[in-house]
Amino acid sequence: MLENRIRELLGRARDEARKAGMNVELSFHREQSSLIRLGNSSVALATHEALTRLDVSVQDGRKVGSFSLTADIVSADQLREAVHHAAENCRAALPKDYDPIFGTVEEAVDDSAGYDPALEALSAEAKTDLCADIIKKLKPRGRYDFSGSWSTGSTEMYYTTTANDSECYRRLTDGRFVMVLKEQDKKWELQVELSQKAAADIRAAEVIAAFDDLRPVYEQNEGFATTIGRQRVLFGPQAIAQLVGLAIWGGFIGRSWEEKRSWTAQNKFGDRILSEAVTIVDDPANPDVFSMPFDFMGKRRRRFAVVERGVFKGLLYDSASAARYGKKPTGHDLASGDFGLAPGDGPAGLEAGRKLAGDALYVPHLHYIHLPDPTKGMFTGSSRFNAMRVKNGEFVAPIFSTRVTDTSPSVFNNVVAMSSKTVTHNESATYGRRTPDAMSVPEWLLCDNIRITDVADSF
Image 1 (cartoon, rainbow, N blue to C red):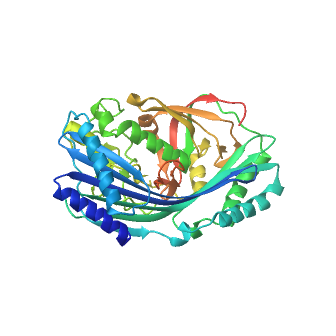
Image 2 (tube, rainbow, N blue to C red; image 1 turned 135 degrees about the vertical axis):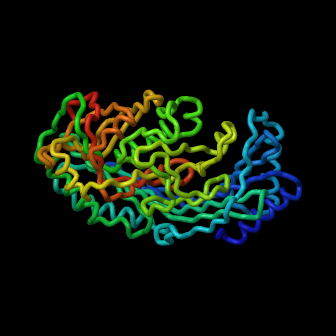
């Protein structure tokens, strides 16, 4: 649980507001964030931040006002002043055109299962030493330059309201490691991404082995320019996570569906909209994700399916959208979820995936993503890192930059097979508040009839 001093001060502020007849929500966020950035094969930046934030929201009928404090919590007077500012903003606010839902902690939560003190304390020096070891061993093997980033830290989140005395608390650690190897003459790039829940999760030998698995195909073969048109594509984890995220954002947000801006707008629950192989769920119990147990309206988060075996099952409603459209909130008043694409029945391992693919493009990463038409689920994105041609089940050449422009329903209705093993893809950003975010995806996803719309003559 949150340290007693801060917990007691926040509890006192809540109780005083309740006695004054106020509807007040208190959201506490504290982070330790450490980041190094690599450029030109050396550390270009090393930062460390320790930040405490408190968001106060006051609701009076249809009016809502808020106030944010970025400072250590030190006194009851400080909190009274923050509540006072939020109340003043509430009085000055225009009323909403719907009855907003007031936050209530449904079930007390005290979750520190994901906390590793060694990861929280991982120093910039230790990170630098590990990266230096990787670069020292790989750099002599070619004309290589290295870049990347490594973010680690801890996050504490606490939520309580005047509706009752219940509290939600979560403390966890996380890390995201990204290293890019760039060949200086031909300009191709390879990337290794790893996710951390504990300090020991990143090892130099693992990163070196991953680059060594990729380098021979790139070093020994010329780049391959594929053709424009519909093709078989074997997607890797980062690309799969992007595809799933695009499908969710474009098709399963409650407000977009209500406003007829989503590609599912003409569908109703129970319709088959995707391949029977496709199940997409938000599931905090999945061991691949960071497992957010509550949202910031106090709702206990549990498994929530948007698609089950291809059938339309659910829409994601934050409390504002739920209030506006007369629906129930679904536990999505938060910055990130615990989404996943359920595994298939294909063989585990990328080698088995490419054997099954036969002849295909392997696209493990999609970059420069855009949604030109969400009403159709249309997206566009380009291959970049680690992309290769598959011929007779083998990687035979790197492929030049290749653009995919297709729709979410088309991609997920043309599934041939996917791995029976899932992996974590870390999607945590390094800007804004520390919000650990990961998706559970199969190791590979094989699809037919993927639309290739542009092919470059270089990487």
